[in-house]
Amino acid sequence: MYNYLIVGSGLYGATVAQKLHEAGKTVLIVDKRPNIAGNVFTERVEGINVHKYGAHIFHTNNKAVWDYVNRFATFNRFTNSPVANYKGELYSLPFNMYTFNKMWGVTTPEEAAAKIEQQRRAAEITEPKNLEEQAISLVGTDIYEKLVKGYTEKQWGRDCKDLPAFIIKRLPVRLTFDNNYFNALYQGIPVGGYTQMVENMLSGIEVRLNCDYLTHKAELDSISEKVIYTGPIDAYFGYKLGPLEYRSVRFETEVLDYPNFQGNAAVNYTDRETPWTRIIEHKWFEFGKDENGNDLPKTVISREYSSEWKPGDEPYYPVNDEKNQRLYEQYKTLAEQEQNVIFGGRLGEYKYYDMDQVIAAALDRCMTLL
Image (cartoon, rainbow, N blue to C red; front, side, top):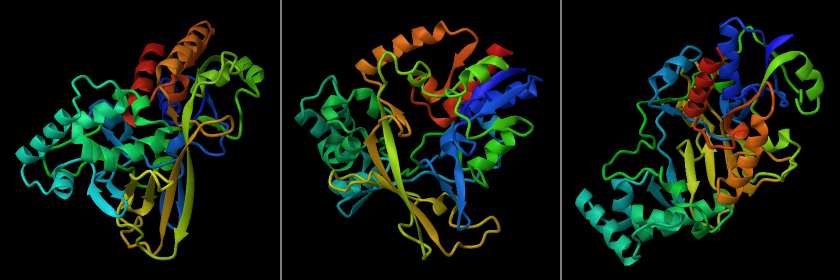
């Protein structure tokens, strides 16, 4: 008999498991994948830690979370400075003075602010009602048309006028020459990859891989006092109220027999015609070096294609529009009636979480449980 059965070994499940195990509880983790670490799983290819399920850059202002993850990994000093490629024109992300200079030829913050204000007024936006209006009010029409519209519509599969304004509110816009995408005090990539970090978190904890909880639910429930479920909440209930909507991502990854493809970890393709949203070159998350500081002779790239989720696909981003939120609330009511089952994480709560937020939520949950 286990005190806790934890379904899923991603960051939420791994954090809860580690804290409960540390407190002397007996814990079993099951995961339907053949590997631990959920979507932060990194796989070693040609000496490079490849982010198998998309780029993950750890960033936080939460010192408690930063101190916690540093128990299990040493983090490098990687700073996220993506590049936007619009039909061969390259722009800095986040939107900053380099972007504004390239777009308009302005050289001072005052000129850049005036240009944005001029375009916002011309669009006659006072209270943004959708993503398009929110973006134009933040960065003006030119930047919206070249660097936001195509990328966003590829990512979400919907017209920007049909997307809620809040999606773009976290978009960094700076009247400085700061290329650091995240306004975070702490930032980096775990040396040795995320898989190694999660492995360290799960030290001494029993893990069963290739084990689908929903297929073996009765048997697994019978050997545990409490279940922490981090899978999709609608799948838990057999989609009986209908499936929640997600965006999924497909990756085309290839090894290239030369050392440098694009010179940056992330390049976003912001025109509507290019089918992928971005290309990740994984070696630049660790400065193109191996663990001994030697240059790596090959490189690995991943093209990312956004798509509508369907059963069998990997669910990535909850579509938190009004219709899906109403459906989620109905599933949440069912979840609250489940005895001895706690729903947590991005899929269990149908909520977009950054990595530090999911760890903070897991730590809070453990404080309640303990």
